[in-house]
Image (cartoon, rainbow, N blue to C red; front, side):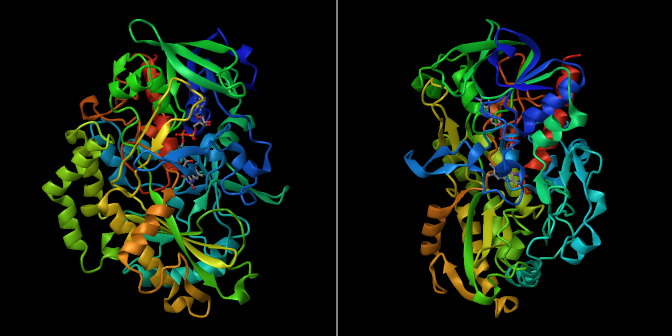
Length: 591
Ligand SMILES: Cc1cc2nc3c(=O)[nH]c(=O)nc-3n(C[C@H](O)[C@H](O)[C@H](O)COP(=O)(O)OP(=O)(O)OC[C@H]3O[C@@H](n4cnc5c(N)ncnc54)[C@H](O)[C@@H]3O)c2cc1C
């Protein structure tokens, strides 16, 4: 494999496939296509970060590594630029080079819904084998199990490229034990399980991470997509070239709207230098991530008419779903001050950034023990679905009522019928505090991302509209309150000095106080999806079930943006499966 930042390797040349973005999806697809002998070019805007300890040292990095982060500006619901930014990986490996490494699988119920949304063949039976294929799990040792590592051998793969394991040493085992005792009290009926990947709906359990322990360096090493699929000696490819530090500016088309290649420029000169072009003989594949692939489509003339004309881009294909349906989980967190005598106890606080040693997934029954059924009734009512769909269309977050209703209904059915989790609660400690990080895990709120100029080096306007749906607010509010119940529960007695440490909303805090704080403090959980949704075009879809962009030829999107609705696992396990399946479809199509 050739990895370089010399544009001459690509400029005016032709490859079978040109892939945009060397992140999780781009590297996975590139690895598979080049493995079958096709010539593949991957153009990556960022540098190679593999030498940098902020990337490879899983425990020692700042969270997330500033070194390879786009830090996209974020806009509020009225379109005003905020001071807070949005994390997304900006070096080879993409977001897997900076992410929290939490690894567990989604459930059958939710993955099967991809198919019911009009995508034949996209179901659990077709995707689960790929989740197994990509993983190389290193089972916990007896010592790790004694310190709280739960493990079910049936829900892991052992022969893939992405390493998953528990950290060495195990993180904060004493604090995790206290959490395991307290969590079922704060969330009624919550079961403590053995492995988060082994669940049909809800459970609290430890999880493994995409890392492995290197005895020589004495460190936990991040198993990023780059580590697994690009640098590994067993994955070297004659026909794969990765061009780093170059930004794809747009897709080029012939007069029949067949994608012929892309143009790109040095990321350092920010478009002020030469604009190069490269040709794709078989297909261009956008894998720049949820927040970047839609803007590339728009700059190339594929998108909603009003967006393109405001940005002064000539429209080639009318595809109003591009950039709509943006979705992430609105993350927030409360802290309790830990009693001083435990501040230096590493079984309680280890200061490591390997995120989320105990994760709970809770459903409506566990949050609202007595009122869950009335909440479910109101969620499924036809009137509430219609009004939710209308508000998404009015906000430009959905293309039409029918599409919005179908997408929302998937999530609502999963919440109500399958009793899948509505919230994730991550039990952590940071120096001096117990910290509960939480988010509505299947949010109904939607936003959008759009370009506002032709300049590819100008960031798009990202308006996530987190917590705009009242149900998401209800969930976040309930979890914030439950976290306070947790800190005041019996198992925490003697360990907690101030259960209302942060935010400073006391035991009598009102819903209005909590909601105002949640609105202020919530940021995306970094599981952005939806802006190039895979579903029928008439419902607002952008790609079909073979991931081809509607209205074009030889152009595909393969990244997190194709997921139309949120899943209850962190995204990696599902996305590796999506990318492997995509590679299979692409290979079939180019025979
Ligand atoms: C801070 C953070 C924490 C996370 N924690 C977890 C976790 O613990 N567990 C989990 O499962 N998931 C986690 N995720 C989510 C997961 O990493 C992402 O969902 C996944 O990596 C998305 O894959 P992708 O291929 O869509 O995009 P990415 O992996 O982000 O790759 C996109 C690539 O495209 C490049 N690119 C963008 N624009 C251009 C352009 N114009 N030209 C060329 N290249 C371009 C980017 O630089 C990037 O390298 C986290 C993400 C972040 C950001």
